[in-house]
Image 1 (cartoon, rainbow, N blue to C red):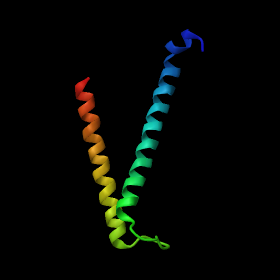
Image 2 (tube, one colour):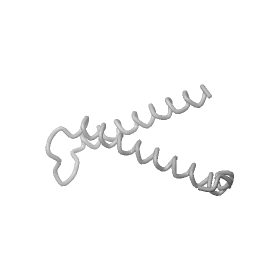
Image 3 (tube, rainbow, N blue to C red):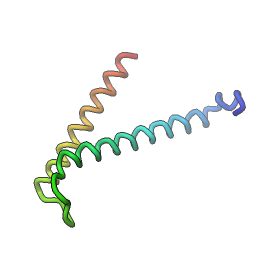
Length: 78
């Protein structure tokens, strides 16, 4: 890659957006795995039970809250 291309604001913006998109995708994947393992204990049917739905919602909320706390903590360290 041409070194001068790395100074292109459009390219840098694109790269940052792709990094953010990758981070979001990774977070969603982890959230899905963690919450699924925690909340879905049997073989799922055609729809979630009310307790499974509540568990998934609470798990996702806690996971996202904790991720925000960690992100803010890292930002304050910089």
